[in-house]
Structure formats: structure tokens, C-alpha cells
Length: 71
Image 1: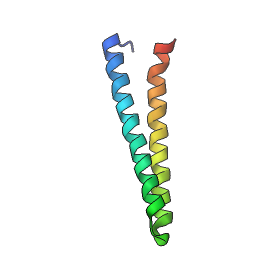
Image 2: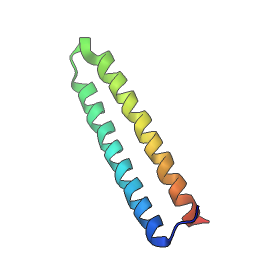
Image 3: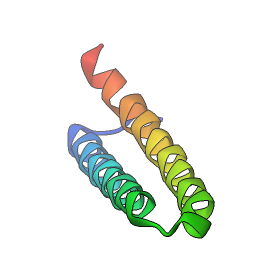
């Protein structure tokens, strides 16, 4: 499917916003892990890893959208 430049721009902006939000969640979850009580650290770390996975997926989506613009 072909997209107009305006559609591509909107898609890139949306993907970038999603990635930024995911990166913010990673930062928040890491901070929570660092300040978690010892008995809660394993759960806080699992939450952090899940946030990393989400950020990675958002970054892959952003890269896929940016790739055609670089070609």
C-alpha cells in the first residue's frame, strides 16, 4: 500500500510518540525497581523487562516506518 507524504509524516509522528511513551515507561519501571522493597524486587524487575519489550517493539515499528524515507 502506498501512502502520501502527509500520511507518512503522521505515521512517523505517531510512531515516535508511541516510542517516547514506551521509553518513559521503561525509565519509570527502572526507578521503581531501584526503590522496591527486597521482597518486591523480582516483580519490579519483571515489570521493567516487560516495559523493555514494549519499547523494543515500538522502536521496531518506528524503524519500519522510517526505513522507506531513508531509501
